[in-house]
Image 1 (cartoon, one colour):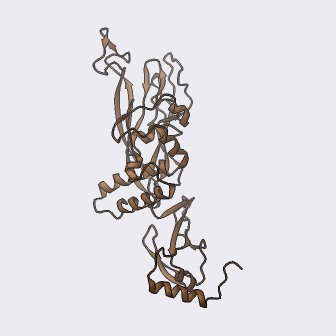
Image 2 (cartoon, rainbow, N blue to C red):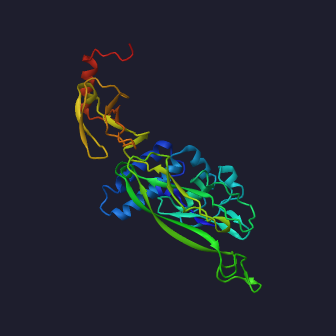
Image 3 (cartoon, rainbow, N blue to C red):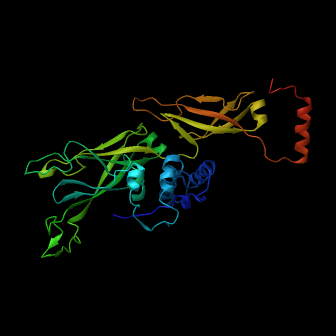
Amino acid sequence: MPVKYKDYYEILGVPRSASEAEIKRAFRKLAREYHPDVAKNKKHAEERFKEINEAYEVLGDPARRRKYDELGPGWSSGADFRPPPGWHSASGGRGGDRTRGRPGEEFDFQFGGTGFSDFFEQFFGGLGGRGARFGTSSPFEETTGTKERGRDVQGDIMVTLEEAMRGSVRSVSVRYGVPCDACRGSGVRGRKACPDCSGTGQTARTETYQVKIPAGIGDGQRLRVPGRGEPGPGGGNAGDLFLRVRFAKHPDYEVEGHHLLYEARLAPWEAVLGAEIQVPTLTGPVSIRIPAGTQSGQKLRLRKRGLPNREGGAGDLIVLAQIEVPGQVSEAERQLWEQLARESRFQPRQ
């Protein structure tokens, strides 16, 4: 089944030769512009933010970027795409997106509302491929009317840090194939391809569920939606749907467990003399004091300003000092720097 190709380089506005630093800068600039909490048109911004995040999920990870580049540069966004032969196995995917419960039944799961496109889910989602399935029933086992529990199905769901902090409810749709009633899954009616299913033996069914994302959820944890997985062979109970949480990349923070890491850029005189600066938190900006003599790489810790956990506590916001120097200076500034160099007794290499 073809999916629409996503040109992640085009989405981030960078060339295919872009360095990791250039990709990160492009992501941060766009993510700040389209973050739903600051944009005026929230609906448009939310969709754009998810698209930017998805692109950075792939291009910001060297291994995923290499796999993506294997697809070749000759594709344009929105074009129907089928991977070249052997691409799944070379990329660690599952080599297909269907599982068979019994002869004549195939279940082809697709997810909507998770924050990831079909293209991403197909080739980079789940456990190396979209719609990963796990459970007890055998995928090729023929049944003789015995009821069996259907297998569980796993997908990914993109969760923003703000959702992880406050909790939310999301609408997630699951689309999957069921045997065509008209031809009983054979794909044939009257020696011709069944018109109801175009000869595939399947018709599509889409169901939408409300999924609660609890405050304090962690990256990589799974949300369980009971009874929404693969239908049970022989009329047995359906398996469960599991959605693995993947935190959306944030333009300001890196996530370390429930701690947030923020890089604070300082002018040299701020680091030497000390300063009071504002840093962003998920609940609004706060002022902090930079001690005189702060070194580049030094960490300042704001207790309980990180992400909440399920036990009722919270991680910390860790402010990492990064001393920046001006790339260009005026003549007057140059004279001041030269005066400082003459008068300073500081010896960095002793």
